[in-house]
Image 1 (cartoon, one colour):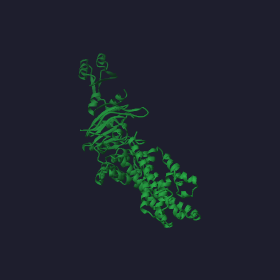
Image 2 (image 1 turned 180 degrees about the vertical axis):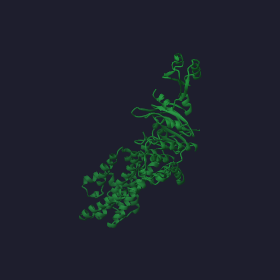
Image 3 (image 1 turned 45 degrees about the horizontal axis):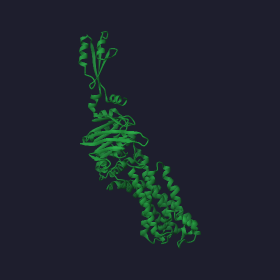
Image 4 (image 1 turned 90 degrees about the horizontal axis):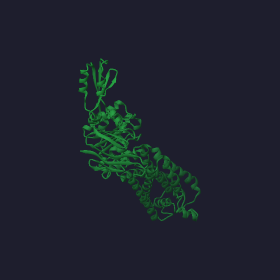
Length: 253
Length: 303
């Protein structure tokens, strides 16, 4: 196993993050803080408790999940797309490093950044909002698992994309709407019956719901179903990535 | 020992273009092999397939006896590649990009070796500079340093001196000769004939995806080169028409040119001179010109 190769990619990607710290860390933290101010303090004070939890506190898991899903996808897609764009991919392709090892390097780096951003948001919000974490182990596990899964998804987008516009296509038109409609800002139980049923088709509902469960012990859906759905999506992405490297899709001519 | 062995290699693109046609080629360990060819001849495609960047359609490539697909970890660990285009992460520092390359090839970190490479390529003073701040020539050196950072046994250079000034070109040639002395096999593509003529041990010529010839440089020039003898005569009034006809001489004022190719003709230069003397032609000067690689190359690819 080429562990030094994996570490080289990981280290390179993490260095890039620290080089552009205002964009990679400060920006998502600021955006999330704005959500807290607008939805939490300004509007939230007019909304009562949801499932026995103060609305501002209720928002925290949803907003963290909203941020890490977007960060994971954008970090990983940009990480692999940029070498394709600049031509430096030649070095990765000509190195004695397997497809799995390449994927590990990029995905672990993207996931690490997301987990870091997620934890910073959590710690920052704890200064202003009352937060309870009933299941800290599960909270951390969900955070890591979802960061890895969506980084893998972003990695696929980065390989598929052949211009910068395509990198933004799926996150903007699919992922963000699904996240907003997936219960980041409300409980699914607050919706009319029809919209509730429709929401259960949205896979993001399961992720946010299980993550919120790790905080407050309340969930819109069964936690086991949520974990199973996340693992299923993870395996699906892994199968797709292995197919990409086996066929050289969008990488090798 | 054979470093690179290519058998019946073909590459076709989806649009039907046949980039490589039944390539058979062997490169011995420790030699400098130059592949000459015009733009679009298939030079880069061949290198990309050997290094694992492009897929082959059929055929076999082995590096030190191992298949470059089945044993890709072994074969790629032996190879360093300098691509035609300068492609680096502009915001990275020179030393960091070398460390990255070395790590990628699973080599134990070695500041000592990287310092040696930086010194050899006159990059020591630039090691903490961001790559974007370097000149084109310096960036080219960084590309070479990256390819050498993992101590490869075979170095592929795809048109390494394209757009590089004469000084750097000569520095690079000296450096490649040093690498050769250390046992590194060098495979370079170029369309600078002078480059191949100066540093290569063996030369291959490729055109339209086909290797036209591979031969030892000196033998190639001997085999396909022509020798031209230019005789300047003093008394042009002499009737030498029969000599001109006999030896198919070209006459330009008082200069007679005799061209012969060792592969095609028998050397009749001694007989020619004897006939001229017998005809009382006074010879002022004799010049001998050998055709260079450029003329051989043009003759082959323009056929």
